[in-house]
Length: 445
Image 1: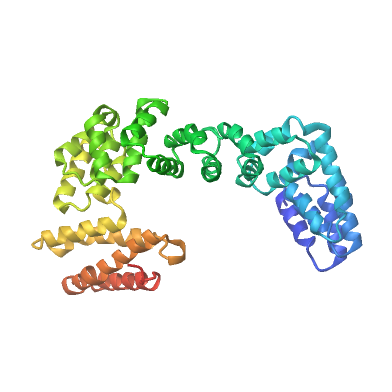
Image 2: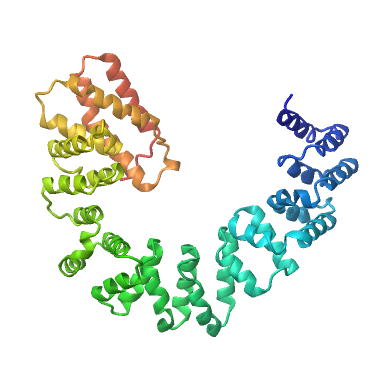
């Protein structure tokens, strides 16, 4: 029997109703230095039978040494949780863990652990660090500013909020671009309400070029309220960006979010060189603003700029409202150029592909119905694999599902029932329609 099987059996025995079996299993588990054993030993420290608690304590003595400290740190939350257990000698347990940390790991490993790890263990260790005063407030702030764990990072926000206004003004530059965007957003949101706007200007300008939309939109709103023109905003983005390419992408992202035609026209007129740097994102933005673009120009941009499949997919989403033949023409040209053995179905999302096929059928009523069967079989296959349960879907996705149901109910189902001679296939489609209907909340519009 392998070690893993033996450990699994002993863990089961350690939870048996019979106290003798539990005690014996706990003693045996002490011989296995496997990560899965430690939580069980800590759990049995709170057993209602004194002999089992004693066995767990004796077994833990084999673990509580410097050799196993890296593993012990990963289970720090179990040690801290022992304080809430009435039968556990938590004082001895926590004292031993603290002694091990202070004897060897305090200066080297703990800061690294607090910054790089996330989860319950790092949060428990952070609480211990505060209790034991391993670091002064300045060191603790520096550690939490760059922590990977959102709860630990919350200390930095709390520290900022509890500081005086003078201290907050001095601290603000430390929440720079190297800090997690959610933490920066929280600090800026608080500072906007409590600090003078002049103090915030540099931080807000930095936020304008943040990849996080929440920071970008927050700073934009503040500058808009201050009466900044679109030219001032664009110039700030260009100055703050590390390269022209990044400035171009940030500007396009801002335009896609703002969706203000006057601002877009101003940028096209006064900053054409910036837009030329990123032709494909610029093309997406033009399509978002519903600009009339020559189809051959679209194809040329995608081919000449070595568009990836994801780029083509996103472009075709904006083009899917076109005539189905036109869309088919675009994708055919692209596929020939890219020399990819693909079909239009791999570019379009399922519901849009369904609409595409319906358009194709309506535009070509002379086509025999059987010529579309493979396309509908593909749609059914893709949809049957999808998770259509409403609890797991966002509202936009539910709306998409609703559109699919309406298409099926109003267009597809009667079409198949009337035209196909394949009774089995017709029955398959009816079942599919019923599957959609039963597994989707149809109240969304």
